[in-house]
Image (cartoon, rainbow, N blue to C red; front, side, top):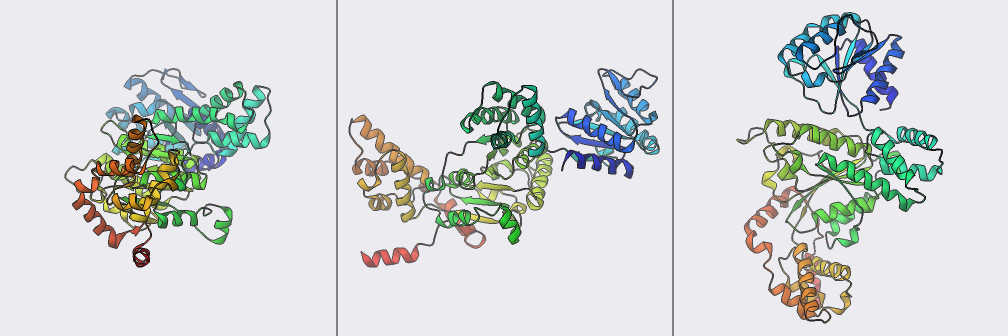
Amino acid sequence: MSQTNHAEEIQHQLNAGYPFLFITTWEEDRVERLAADVAARTRRPWAIWSSTVGFHGPEPDTETSGGAVEDIERALEAVSALDVAVVLMKDLHRFMHERRIIRKMRDIVPRLMQHRTIVIVSAPEMDLPVELEKEVSVLDLPLPTRPRLHDLLRGVLAEMNMELSPEFADRMVYSALGLTERECARVFRKALLRGVKSADDLTIVIEEKKRLLKKSQSLDFYDLDLELANVGGLEELKRWLVQRQDAFSERAAQFGLPPPKGLLLLGVQGCGKSLTSKAVASLWKFPLLRLDLGTTFSPTGRKEESLRYAIKVAESMAPAVLWIDEIEKGFAGAEAGRENMDINSVRAFGSFITWLQEKKSPVFVIATANDISGLPPELLRKGRFDEIFFVDLPNVHEREAIFQVHLTGHGRNPGNFNLKHLAKLSEHFNGAEIEQVVIGGLFRAFTENRELHQRDLERSIEQTVPLYNTYEERIKALREWARQRARWASLDTTRLDFFSQKEA
């Protein structure tokens, strides 16, 4: 939605008689522009109030600045007497849970409606008292889009008397998506002052964005440094992903295809779920964001607001991949009716699954889970994800492929080793354990000042106790659940095994 469309939306709220509008955003200057736009459309004045300086615009007769409850009451009383289109009250959200402020806001509703005035409350997070929920409309102001960032960049270039090619300017804007307007302007200035000249120099913008996003604590921006070829096995899952590589294109939309919503990868630890999540973004050339639900849903976390911010950032960077690792840990306690239910987690979870079901923006959500018992059943309902894939322990063919990946990754020629024998010896090993087998063998060879041999890997396998030995019953139960409810990420190799045995 453009700035103009947001102004139209506020004008509709004004004309419909809504007395209060809560806008969730960090960007007060954008809200000021919206208020000015609405005032121009209605040909009426507008005003801004803050606790430090009182009113800007039409002045009431009484002193209305100050941070005490009595000062806020006087300011609200003065607002109800003004004949203006919009009043932006910058600091009101800090007092909206005070009993007397709630009462005063409800008292002035008829006068605001009579004057056709709407009071805008701007704040980074929304926390409405229940008494005001029916009186307050809510508007979530998204982060700036590409066209707006192009305008910002042109302004910064003019200010610094510099020029960029259209192609390079577009790359710079794309690199800055996900930040506020003010953050983008600062990032642009910093990059230009350091003399960006090529696409490689844009790492300045990306690194600055990583630093700014880390302030959210629950959101991380990842580099695209892992290819799908780095994931051994899981051929059925890979085929599904490759098949949808162009599903976000204009050609796909014209063909009648909806953009994919996402995947839930359920399965055994260490079997490539997280690696696949990272590789999807590289395959599709999308930015990759990781949402840490453990931080978001921590006792000190803001839960619903943190989740809303993460979604807002992801949508501003769309098309993008939003990766949620071990989703069951984040949503523990979010299932309504549980004994240890947390009402704030339930509300945040409800917002998340509604967004997952209804989202129109091209944000591909890829979630991983190790324990199905920790997942609320609502998350598994059809329509939340395009597909639920079960990632089992790798079969013998996949173990061979995983050995090949890790030997190659550590600078060794897989052709120098008997991979089939290693794959057979490592039955019940997961991918992470196979990687550690290779690393363990390398350490042994390094300590003895020689090259890696087959026997080093075999000894490393012999000394490894796989996770399967500890969690055999849990893994079997997970397989049984997935048999009728999920699609298997690995190809069915039963027939291949049969013919391999016949040849032997």
